[in-house]
Length: 147
Image 1 (tube, rainbow, N blue to C red):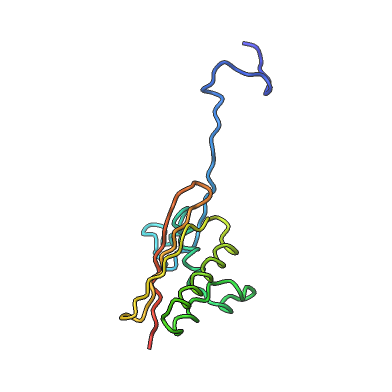
Image 2: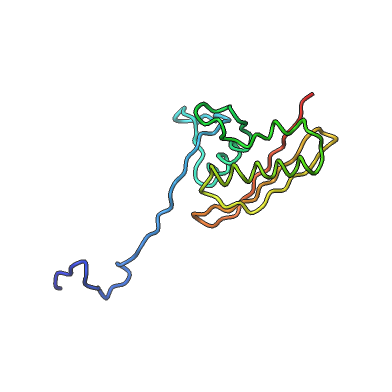
């Protein structure tokens, strides 16, 4: 068999295979789960890590992060506003803004805000698509007013 260069095509197509590699994302699990054998904190990986990062963005307020004072959805400041349609619009706009600006790995599909007046809370459901592998996910967050 002759020595084939990179530019020559071989008849054996099974050898000429292209593997797609998916980026691996990791994030710190804030529940600080300990690995039973390594005795180290277990990190979150891939889709779960992206969902966790998105959840952390939504529960963060302005001026909570040093050197990134506008990073966050600032939803806690809206919890003590009147429970009306204008507050829901403000919450939805803040969520859209923070995802568009600080989370380039996802496309936002929709935001649903449910007013739970009896519990002094809002339930926020965010539907998004992870750009890299085209998987649709959703996260649920309950924002509660404490009196």
